[in-house]
Image (cartoon, rainbow, N blue to C red; front, top):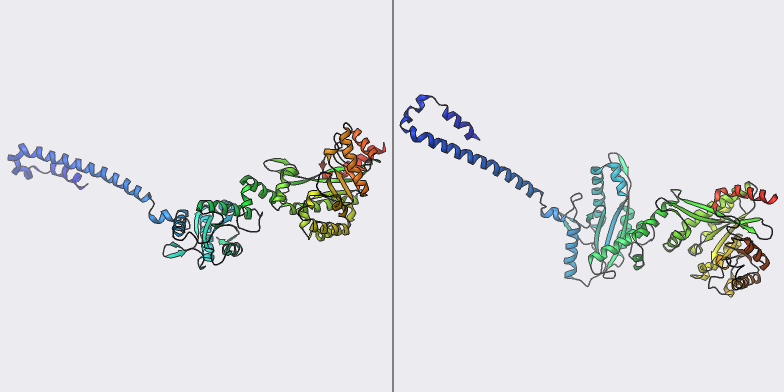
Length: 508
């Protein structure tokens, strides 16, 4: 740049300074002009070179250095690439050993991110990562990963997911122990700008080589175990092959179901049961519905089988029983003495505390036990007949009525049914629908009714839609009926109004 300022000064010099150069004027001025042009060219070229150099330096600065390539930019802990490289080398050296992959996930961190902002959330994430590492770094069975000048036992896989590699040769269940310890001890509230932030950690474990020999496959299985544990479908964090039959959509649906009670998405409908001889309303069956936020109204068949399979049915049963007992209390206060029937799942009969909890509900509401009917399917008795029979006997001693649902469709022997302390049987609608049109159907239904009468059981026929069917059932000795002929299911809270209207119609 300094040359740009010197050239004008040269040409502006006084005449006496150039007097000695007159003899050289013919060739000196063209030479000076040529030099000036050359300097100007070099200057412009230098400026272009500087711009190119700055762009190159900027590009170089943006390229990841070795540390950035192998470490998470937020927490500074080894990333997934570094973790995979370490595990690959370890398994190449000694593939015959037994190891465990431990995955950890911070639950609902997106809410923290929205509440605190990205920078504060990143600060919190770094503190949680340090807490997790502190729980692992001194354990001799956990693989140590290099991290700056210290050791790290945890890798940050991205987002809110972390991983550790545990030697399982000496202690088979070491990974499960570490997972439980982290879940219990790490999630203590953290202070950010004076605010105590609470969070929860879920974990999943997959074993090498039991669950796979490739790291990607182990990652998938550990993640499935984590999802099950996160949604509270499993008490253990360890992968089980049965988990593979569940898609992410099913897991999400079950997770939503676990929150449905708190969010008031569950509702109860009811369908009355009548005495076929007197048309008096003697009971009503309670039916569970789920008003799903995205899928709309779901019937029991849409979610209860899956809930039972995944161990979520008992909390739902407790909620339904509580609602039913409260409704019975309200009906008694309004002068209605009818019973309510609630369906029990097979796993409900494995809950030994069911009897005590139900007894407490009835006593608190001052409801006679006989006003509650518990319906059990025959299949519910087959998984553990002895334990199921014990619970049924205790319920019978409590005084509640017991009904065997879908009678005639199960596989139980008459000898076993005779041992059951049931007072009612419900004949499935598949035997009822064409009763008045088919002699074969009538013969099958008659045989079922004869068996029930020989066992001295009250018979309730489901699915009655036509008066001709009701008339035929009366002739065959059926005592009670339920179906669209009398009423479609309606909201449980509307039962008192429906009863008043029914009684008013019958008086006319």
